[in-house]
Structures are given as structure tokens and as C-alpha cells.
Length: 273
Ligand code: ATP
Image (tube, rainbow, N blue to C red):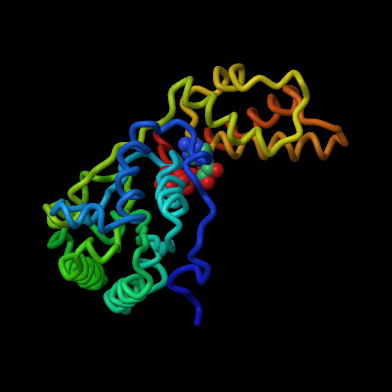
């Protein structure tokens, strides 16, 4: 079959240490980790654990990474699926895929289900219904709502989702008992970028002239994904030049390359400018 629903290997080895910055967001999801580790502690006191946590923020800021880290810290399976998969791969079978996903997750509880790009299935219903295919998406969304209502977080299944378009989400998704907890994930500031560089520089053989502080200053506006990309490019450039260690010169070339790529992408998105 062409599309697997989710990775067969649902164990992750990402921890909070791999997630740089995002201190407030980490603080907020810590509760979910603690719950997954000892659900009884919470349920015996009558507290209600959130069913769904929505991570809201621009692309590449570590939303997927953070969700994975929650599973990694709690040592529970991580089931993941991207909203765009439903649109692109699961044509005609979206609703049954959702049912399968929740069925598998219930069997493996405690666990995390992560839906990336939830806006691809979670857009407000009932608009543009002249276009074919919209009903399909609505069926998928309806099934998701049914599944969310049909389980209680006490069973140990926590739903996490990510979007950079919370404004287009169907309000039914945001009601109490669904994604009622929202966590904002912003692009990193100077200090955040420095911390992200630190994490990604760990895996690199560096020359002594490398400074994560200087690199953070050279990368205003960068998200974590771009920083990871720069570090990787720099290592490749150094290798191509047969260097023993990656130095600032390599980083300068890598920056030019990544910034050039970003500019091209932006031009494609806004050709009028
Ligand atoms: P998208 O919305 O595009 O899916 P995302 O917010 O889910 O993006 P991730 O997929 O988590 O972003 O990030 C991509 C990669 O960028 C990560 O695997 C990691 O290597 C790096 N990265 C992003 N943010 C951070 C961070 N805060 N700390 C360390 N690495 C990060």
C-alpha cells in the first residue's frame, strides 16, 4: 500500500534537552508528561487532564520536536500524522484513517497522538462546499471530533496538534474537552537562537573560533529549523573543503546559502514584491 498511517516505530528518543529555549512551553507541557507517567496521581484527586493541546506558531519553531519530547520524556509511544497527508494521500478514506489512528492509540495507551498541520483538516466547515472534495475533508474533521469526544484523557491518550493558522480552525475543535489548551511557540529571540545553536553545535566538530553568541547575532528572524539547517550546511561545506573542523568561514558560506534559499522562497510566495 502506498501510504502508511504512521511510523511503525512509535518510540522516540527526543527529550527536553533537545528542545532549546521554549521554556514557557516546556513548563506547560511538563504537566502532560507527569500525567502520562502517573495518571492515577491526577485522577484520584478528581482533576481533569486536558485532552488536546494545540501548539500554535510559525513553521520550523520546534512544535513537532516539543511534542516528540513529551512522548520521549514520558517514555510513551508517539503516533504522528500530518494534516496534509489526509488531503494528499488518504483521499476517500480520511475518516476511516482517523478511526484507525485512535483505535491503535487506545490499544497502546498511555501515548501521544500528534497531528501536524491540523489546519489542513481542521478548517472551518461549510464554506466553499461547491468544490468537490470538501465534503471529504469535512467527514474527516467530523470523525476527528467524534473520536475526541469518545475518549477520556484518563485512559492516557493525549492529543497534540500543531498549526500556524489557528484563525482558520473550526471553532468546534477549540471547544472545552477538545483542544482547549493552546500553547504559543514563537520564533526565538537572540538568546533563544544562541541556545538552539548550542544544541546543534554539539554534534559538530568545531574550530575554536566558533561562537554560538556571534552566530545568534548573525541570524535575526531565523527559526530553529533554519538554524539546524545552517549547522548542517556548514559541516558539509567544511567537509567538501577537507577541513578537520568546522570554522566561522564555513558558517559564513552556509549562512549565505541558507539566506539565499529563504529569499528565493519568499519571492515565490510573494511575486508582487
Ligand atoms: P512545521 O510547522 O514546519 O512542521 P515545527 O514547528 O514542527 O515546524 P520542527 O519540525 O519541530 O518544527 O523543527 C524542525 C527541526 O528544527 C527540528 O527537528 C530541530 O532540528 C530544529 N529545531 C526547531 N526548533 C528547535 C528548538 N527550539 N531547539 C532545537 N532544535 C530546533
